[in-house]
Amino acid sequence: MAKQKDIYEYASDWKREHDSKVFKVVLAAVIVFFVITAVNSFVLYPVMVKSESMSPNLERGSSVFVTPLLKTPKRGDTVLLQNTSGKVLRRKEKIVSQLMSFITLRRFFPYQNGSKMAETSDVRRVIGIPGDTIYMRDYVLYIKPADQTHFLTEFELIPRQYNVQIFSIPVMWDTTLGAIGSFDEIKLSNGEYFVLADNRVEGTDSRLWGATSADRIKGKVLFCYFPFNRIKSY
Image 1: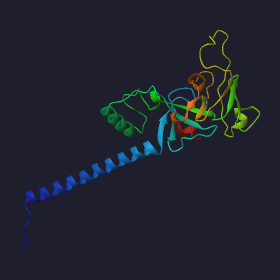
Image 2: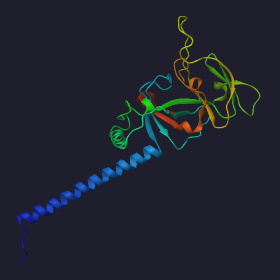
Image 3: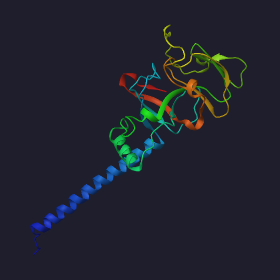
């Protein structure tokens, strides 16, 4: 006759099964966390736009997907630039920041004043590429590529359509403030890119920073996914 299990044996079996299920759930969550973190770091990750610099094409509060796999931009590409003024985090702060960014789909980064865009990066449009000779008049860039002899406007050279925000500066404004609307010819060296904000009057860009080096370009913006009524590929 088979021996019946007593209540303690049933309790022990239940506890083992329960612990096994809990372990599997925790293990699955850890694996998902590391997979998503790896994808966010090396393949595709979202970034929130925190300024009006790319208006009217990317408004403040828009969220875009960026891929670090495409770091060599073409003329007209919208790119993510790394800013050297970002806060350096300690190991514990990095772990907490990564965990919170995972939970909030990378819309909140503790210790960094909000999103990833807040202090460490900028989204701008690549207008000038290595070898170009460029100058600006009335906030429009004129470009002579290395293999050409005549200047053309940025809109003639870039097949991708985009709008720029230009408005008349009030007479009482101090013209030494804000982004300049005109400058004389300069030539871009190897590895130098000239990036501009679509908001040409209020945005900061290569007119203030100078040409951007290739190693500061952290990825290409692929598309805007929020707000939903402004979904657009780049």
